[in-house]
Length: 249
Image 1 (tube, rainbow, N blue to C red):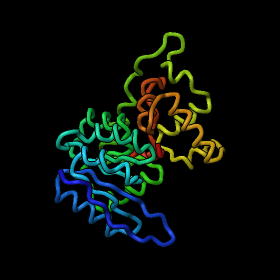
Image 2: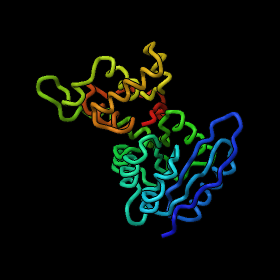
Image 3: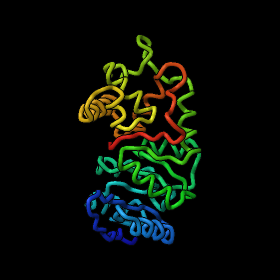
Image 4: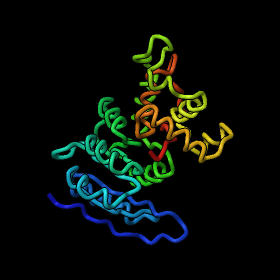
């Protein structure tokens, strides 16, 4: 197994440079992604890993902002890799970059802690935009993937408590926390939630942290998945086809 390859750092004057790591077993594909990042202003490719095992061993010391992850890896798969890395790198944002577009893979990845889900047919321009978006607090998804997520909200609610019609976890949410979670599920960015509810951005962050703690989740889409099971009637309507808002969980 080849150890992770450290990325070349770019000098960025007057703007944030996003540190990105890649977990991809296909060497040519991995190199293409790395080149896309290195040649773009505002990005740093800080690590390239051919397996989940090498990423788990070395990436915690690198601390990337965003991680692009293939699902079909040799040995440990990409979804389980995200689950384990999220526990070690809670501030990192994980974006799946895969050929799989079935519901099981999508929701397993989101529940594991992924914040975005892109297909490998994504163009260079779309990929760089997605990395910027997830770093800014969004949840980028290929359009047909986003439609499948939205469709899941239209299924009837799952298990609830007899007394309140809610799960025990969601029953603990305050009215304001419910408002924040509803906007989060609709794709609002943190700043947009603050503007909509006329509260400060730090206050939004506090509510999000409390929601995560009460729902026992670590990411926006894990919280939204819980929300989809108890919201009455059809699920929350999205703001747009790509479900643009998100969190740095």
